[in-house]
Length: 383
Image (tube, rainbow, N blue to C red; front, side, top):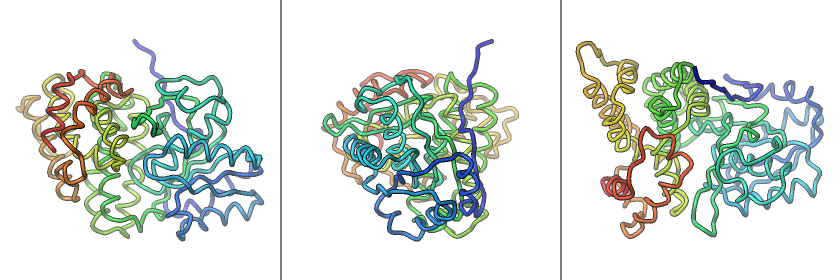
């Protein structure tokens, strides 16, 4: 039997109000000064004091770096690294969704490994563990706070660089649904379908194994049961908390089983057009999985059962068709855009997008590798 390695942060704190207790988890670690990596929206919001108050109470200093934008860039990482080194910070706190989490991972890796961000594109290119990161999540979707994957945009090439690196794993993750209640409906929807993408790709990839299957299936059910409510009723803490558990489970699944061609294509849209990652995943998910179902239809049977289909007497293909249709229904229910042209994508760029998708680190984990021409046609379906 093949060996499986399961990566997850050493400490994972979750549940309503858990942000108030982070001091008691950080204090024993002996850190003195944090670089707090976030974005300008969060640094001016009422969420930031909820993070800094526990730090003040235990006497840990912090310096705020909030120049992180959606789809963080090499320049942003380098700016944060300079600030960290000039101020002798001995750990990092990341606050936000996928962008601050990824930027923090990049800064933490360069702080201990040196070099430049481009040196580490690909899989497990570092030799040293990253500077310790306490990852505080504010969106229910990316799971960047618990995974060994991070994404940094090389602005010179217009490409999202995918780093899969065991040395980038955060020391501690924090998921408090009370930090998420004011998230806009469109962001809640996009990040929620992003988590669904993580779960389904983890279930259909050849890298799946029993442990990842169990957590991915649980995540799928939680997302289908709770995402529409979280989008419609942002302050519904039951739905928000269940989505917190869903993203944690989804993150554990893809962190250890892998992703696939949905992400390979979505990364290119984000790199070239600076589009929201979750929205791109959501639009591509049913199209790519329709093609995957032609190759591994049996992988969709359990997904169909989890979301409510009585599969007795039904073929694997019928189960796959049901899953794909229900993904479309859910996306429409939560307001995911239907056409890439609405987001400014142009047909002239499809060749480049498709060629780069073939080279993406996630492409090889898909059940099969579409050709460039097939990829262009998939893009065209939602153009």
